[in-house]
Image 1 (cartoon, rainbow, N blue to C red):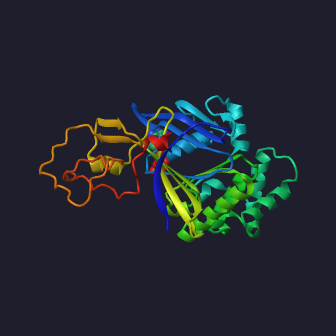
Image 2: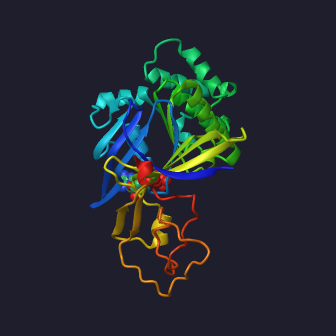
Image 3: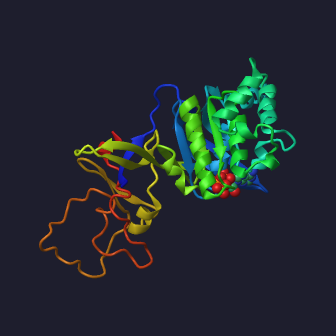
Length: 353
Ligand SMILES: Nc1ncnc2c1ncn2[C@@H]1O[C@H](COP(=O)(O)OP(=O)(O)OP(=O)(O)O)[C@@H](O)[C@H]1O
């Protein structure tokens, strides 16, 4: 059974990650109206990581992938992929970056492959466009075998299943040995079983070839295939779930999922929606530094409508979480009940250090 804990992690920078986004901003202007698709997003992927990116519709996932793939240019901030500064690339460098440094898999199978070429010809075309050296035929065979689609090498996309088409698309994307593989809803048009096999293929490619991989998805089963899931909300990274296996005191292996709020370099974090709703937080909140945590309390005066019951047997605990910091009165009508403890706990000062 999965156990969920919460701590705050700091987005510090050590080493040379393959993906670095720092205070990334993308503003679109449509018919005189500005839309802030990314509002100071921070993200880093270390070399060889496999990460899923999730978030509600409109949260900025595709905008981020557009920037990381070199298709779009951010308005402000830092975006570096495979050592390239994406705000400073010239036109020719950008073309070379897209051909050699990143591979891309789209949701629509039709967008990934040329319909009049076979699977092998699609991979060969990608190698030719990038000017790949060496034995291209051998490389075509190799990547189709890695993706377990050597059997459909001579078929055109229309003669393959959706899952086979996406596997061939992954083969095309990794043919040039890019440092980073980006996938936008790669399983969006597939049924559950086929989705699982495509996600598994991406995990296997990541493991065998060490290509740093970022998968944008709505697929709820993605957590079974990745060790790290990043959630973005309103154009910013808000929470991360890290999964690992631990051995308990009886020697049994336990899958552990820990949920973290993401603290950026200047100390900002997003409170989960259900915390905000449960305490009716708005406009201003009171912060206080406690011995081992930071407490967040509603900014407005809390006037309980009825006298709170006096505890008899159970002593009232010291506030240690956002829920603990709640007034003792029940939440106002219309506000959701406080979330169960353990799903999200409040960030603690100790954890942030
Ligand atoms: N070219 C554009 N011009 C104007 N606004 C845009 C443009 N592209 C995206 N947006 C806006 O930016 C915000 C983020 O869009 P984005 O497509 O990145 O979200 P998303 O998380 O990928 O959504 P979905 O899951 O529905 O694909 C949205 O409000 C969207 O309407």
